[in-house]
Image (cartoon, rainbow, N blue to C red):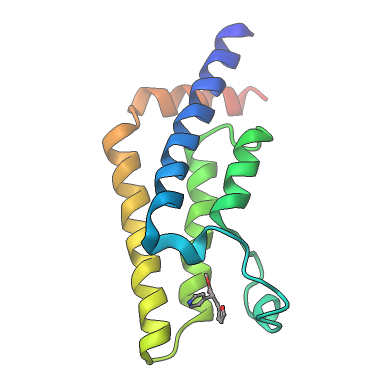
Length: 130
Ligand SMILES: COC(=O)[C@H](Cc1ccco1)c1ccncc1
């Protein structure tokens, strides 16, 4: 009912606010758009579930996330893919892995600091009843 729609609207506002801050962070530029399949032809053979911050924003607007847990599943996919595709012990791969680890720690710290537990609980409750 209307209270549920109010909760999901507030969730979308919170998730856009978090995602916009990640997109503005220069360290995360490589994560802001899909990896270009033409430039990196073997990317899809290694990474089974590509994800990036612009796709996350689009999913927020298309109301694909009912809980913060679902949002974090996609953001975690972004940095996990980077660790998987860039494993070499060279400065180029080490730099993207360092940025992937920063993305992971940044998003989880923001959620821990800014998400109220009972707000996520009410989102999970809505998810269960659907
Ligand atoms: C999330 O971004 C990536 O995994 C690409 C992979 C990639 C390799 C070559 C071109 O792009 C990347 C971009 C920038 N610096 C390192 C790796």
